[in-house]
Amino acid sequence: MMFHIPGLTTSVLLIAILSLSSSLAIGADDYPSRPIKLMVGASPGGTTDTMARAIAPPLASSLGRPVLVENRPGAGGNLAADAVAKAAPDGYTLLVSFTSHTINATLYPKLPFDPVTDFTPISMIATVPSLLVGNPALPAQDLAALIALAKAKPDALSIAIGGIGSSLHLAGEQLKLMADIRILNVPYKGTAPALTDVLGGQVDMMFISLVTGTAQVRAGKLRAYGVTSAQRQPSFPDLPAIGEIVQGFRSTAWFGVFGPANLPADITNRLNAAIVAAMTNPGMREQLQNEGAMPVGNSATEFAAFVRDDVQRWAPIVKQSGARPD
Image 1 (tube, rainbow, N blue to C red):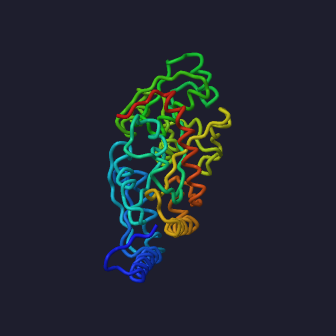
Image 2 (cartoon, rainbow, N blue to C red; image 1 turned 90 degrees about the horizontal axis):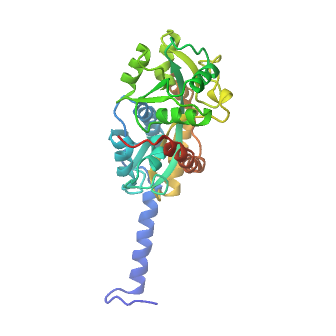
Image 3 (tube, one colour; image 1 turned 90 degrees about the vertical axis):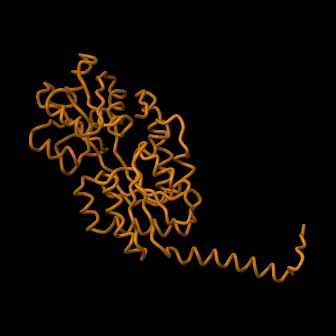
């Protein structure tokens, strides 16, 4: 059906349509033409902020525009995620998120966005494993002995939780579920006070990031029982992966870059190529590895599949834990 608009000929209308199409194409071809903002749902100095600030300079160099980091902490990363979900899908407002992105899908009864459908996954930056550590006064010398002790004395041992619903909290719930043991949760407002009480012997054990826990283990202030990655870590070659004792166990924090839903494919591909190039740079790899991180830099398709699967992987663990948002 054709509509007649008074005073507007068919040729003029065609020119207008072609002009609009041309301007949209030029906009995509010219990307980026202004600074890009990386939203971070955590405070400055944390691991997510560190990842964002590590990736910003190589992105800026590759794209030829400034890449700025904006911290918007709160609600387990949901405030920053919501801002990006509602942003224009033009590649100028991106999200650097972490494991909570997929945990929150189950942890929060209601979110103002869908963690899967309201975002365009661009690439994973890196993964960071954690350590299960305990006070050296514990009689169990290794993980098998620790599990045996927990089985013999249900709820007698305690585990510190630095943040309800965090990947470290849920690593503990996953261990309890898979090893069929009962350990008493002791929640804290942050990793620092939790670590203080494990060091002091008020609490028996905790999961802690490889970055934070390495120095304490090497100083003999904590005993390491296992690492949460699928394989052993080069920094602790003699320390078993927990999965060697508890078959199938794996729990690593991940960090990645997202755009809003419906981000054009050419912009997604350009951003992905810039991140992948950064992750293969020897200097960047060394910087991340010094932070205890394993660089990734996968394709947008691979990252999207991972995000969907990770929501499903965490769902039964979150439900089993009974965790509720702070």
